[in-house]
Length: 281
Image (cartoon, rainbow, N blue to C red; front, side, top):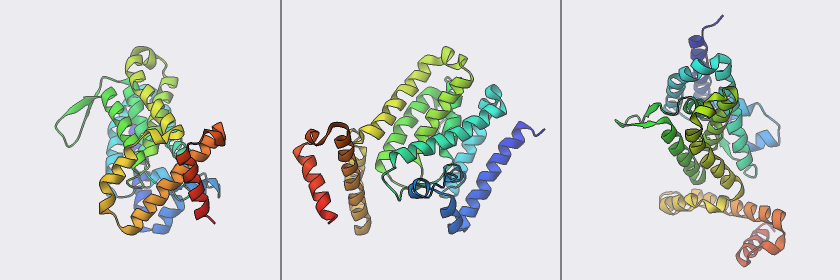
């Protein structure tokens, strides 16, 4: 029977090999990356898993693999190798499903990375050992696991709203949530013993997920990021950003109509919808 350590190294090797192939072969990268249109229209559901074995660069890959190496042992020690693998792949798929839900109207949205699975492993570790310390490399300080997870949720929400790159920040949040919940399901005693720390993380996490999906206009981080960086982007990129923001606003208005009808729209929302319809003619 293969040892636990060998299986973890095998998982790391698979990430390195697939990522390297993606670095050197653009068609390979595009064939297996997460892309909304390919999944929803072409039904290429394999991308929910294969995208987790690709990365945007060596630093992205190295950070994820080091995190996997250091945190996997704690999860395996309590849940066993099967429990660890269940959390890894459930978090990977769960994170991508959250990305798919959030970006279901953005057909060209894409992302890659094992971060959803890694966050699931980290959050599972926190659920089991909330008092553990996590170093903030390269800073010479460490944080309690529960505080690290809470801050990570906030930073993930910021990254989701600012849309700075094609790293799957939504998958970070979704993967972490799935990993923590699954760890509790497998070992219910963890919640009984650590319910305060777990709820401190889960409650804001669930609230943020709800806001991102249902009330994205409440989270103004995207606007702040745009105002800060708009003078440092090209005209074409600025145009694309403006189009994306407008499309997101229209999607929100349409969702509001489906929930409450046309009568619920403000004058500004009606004008936005009218201008958008004229542009499409």
